[in-house]
Amino acid sequence: MYELGHFIDGKRVAGKSGRVSNIFNPATGEVQGTVALASDAELAAAVESAKAAQPKWAATNPQRRARVFMKFVELLNANMNELAEILSREHGKTIEDAKGDLIRGLEVCEFVIGIPHLQKSEFTEGAGPGIDMYSIRQAVGIGAGITPFNFPAMIPMWMFAPAIACGNAFILKPSERDPSIPIRLAELMIEAGLPAGILNVVNGDKGAVDAILTHPDIAAVSFVGSTPIARYVYGTAAMNGKRAQCFGGAKNHMIIMPDADMDQAANALMGAGYGSAGERCMAISVAVPVGEETANRLIEKLTPMVESLRIGPYTDEKADMGPVVTKEAEQRIRSLIDSGVEQGAKLVVDGRDFKLQGYEQGHFIGGCLFDHVTPDMDIYKTEIFGPVLSVVRAKNYEEALDLPMKHEYGNGVAIYTRDGDAARDFASRINIGMVGVNVPIPVPLAYHSFGGWKSSSFGDLNQHGTDSIRFWTRTKTITERWPSGIKGGAEFVIPTMK
Ligand code: NAD
View 1 (cartoon, helix red, strand yellow):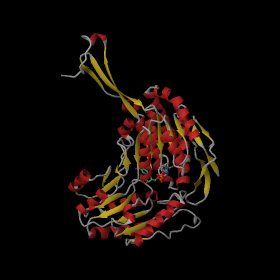
View 2: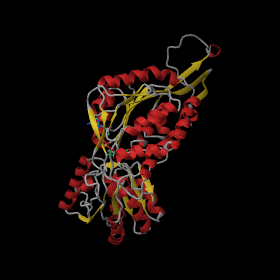
View 3: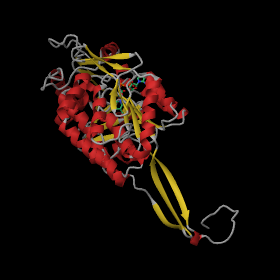
View 4: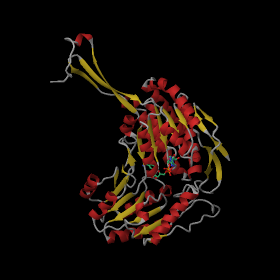
């Protein structure tokens, strides 16, 4: 048993609120530790530390800021095994998948090593007689990030790396399910040379989130989690005068055209549907084969593959996927599977009875495969966030395209085909933020930006890529003229370029 507090002003501190939340081991169902839930005063202490440190950090030249990330990347690589173990122990995902989580975060840290170039801005010589005009991108001041359980290393890094590289101080409020890894990352940032107070980790629940959203000294908030909370955070942050980008849930479809390579499509669906037990915002949860014959071939290929999924605790090196995160998540997923059966979908592979010897209290669910799912069913409308793939049969391409187009969510989508015309038409017409052509989980790399459309995202700037530099900075435009360029007396008419 361990007790996790916060990370404020460059060091670990114990929680003082007297409120804690249990941290479970998803494979055994046992409580392995507790995490403190911050009070308003604890959040305020983190903001004070950030406020004291931020001006000097913003004035530190960008090459020096970049060097902290160079060293941090080195430390991440050197400590990869230890970090993956910390992450998997609380999340439940396999060690290799935990390394992927860390590496996708590390890649954004590599991207921001380019901050001297990324934060450069525009200059116009001679915008008017003797007038030069330039824009600069200054840090917003103090930024905050609120993150979900499913990528407890990657998403914090997606937020704090660009925010800090731009000269901001940052307050991270991680998920209370797997809070150890963010604190370890903050320690490594200090080891890499970051001044105390620039990265604080405040653990907590809704109380800590509300304290962030109403604190007058926090200028910008980034959120990733479920859609109802994303909507709430976006609205509350805006009402309190903060800049906000909030990313929500998903229901990602994969269209399989009759000409697709069926082996490739089935392999892609296995990884994208069941990897990390389906607990990914870019998981494929709906497969849409076009035509009855394509659908029959797909079900025939997938069925034995889903039946033979290897499921185990993170310590099982051969496991394809682990348990889901909590008992509540497991119960929610099970009740959605039951609803699918009740509402008439065909449960081709039923993983509900899966049991692992020695881990009977773990939150395991076997892989489930539904066929003949229709858009009115709850399993189609809801983000299940578990190892459940639904097959919706479409008569033709237009009917297939219509499904993700009309769905509430718009995070990711994919098409499998050999037909360039169909792929191009699909990428152009679809109303979804991230599109894969023969790529099942089209998560853009660090130097492009990540974000969905519709109910998957609120706000207008995405994560990482150049969007993140814009989000974490404010533009200031300076118009200057020197005495030798000033002619004549007072002017009472608005200056124009006529
Ligand atoms: P969640 O919404 O339950 O929690 C996210 C964060 O919000 C946590 O830090 C949590 O403490 C906080 N929170 C929870 N309830 C709150 C409340 N009532 N008021 C204020 N704050 C609250 O999400 P989760 O279960 O941790 O993560 C899974 C969800 O995240 C899925 O919907 C998934 O699709 C989504 N997600 C989206 C993306 C994306 O980029 N779009 C990426 C990863 C995960």
